Length: 268
Image (cartoon, rainbow, N blue to C red; front, side):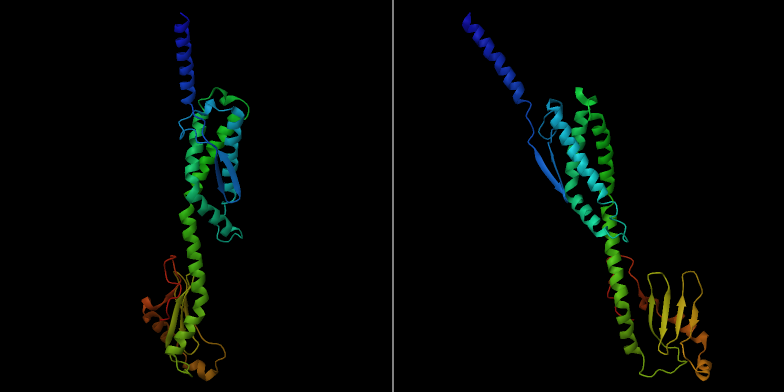
């Protein structure tokens, strides 16, 4: 009889131990993003139930990730604002997050779903943690979705700036190539044409004259300054306007519209 009771006791103890073994405690993991740090546990990945966790620890872990996501959103809100002083720093954090944050969002979302099944989900700070966590996960995913556009806009701005800085040199090279040392006033010889970032196209002539055209407007002739009365009589605006019209469109030095466009376009 005693032997039978001992076997029953051992079988019962083994069942308890088996039940405990079926509920592994996930290891603490560490995540860093920029200057932010947070510890968390992947309950779903460890096939564990967050409801079995110590509520205080679970609260601290979920709050830590919520805080990190909040700082991430604050630190990337101007990643696409090319005129913001902190744009480069915000974009760098966004690019880092695009590589490392998505798995953390999956884990955090899974932990929040698990919390919704717990008996203590309505206790203490858990309702606010859950509500805030859902909002932050959604907002963080939306922000990550802006990464490619922000990177492309930044690259385009850099390309356009390089193009702008090199425009004077390209114009000087074209002048040296196509103009004589002492060009005659009145000769409508185009040596260079450029379409600027503001959309204004200008044709430059060897005698200092210019033709400018704004978007959806007729071209206008601009004579060089300091002409004498005799020189002014030689200048015939229609000839310059015609020369600008006949200048090959493919030879116009245009501001890049994509980051892939060459910023060191050769002079026409």
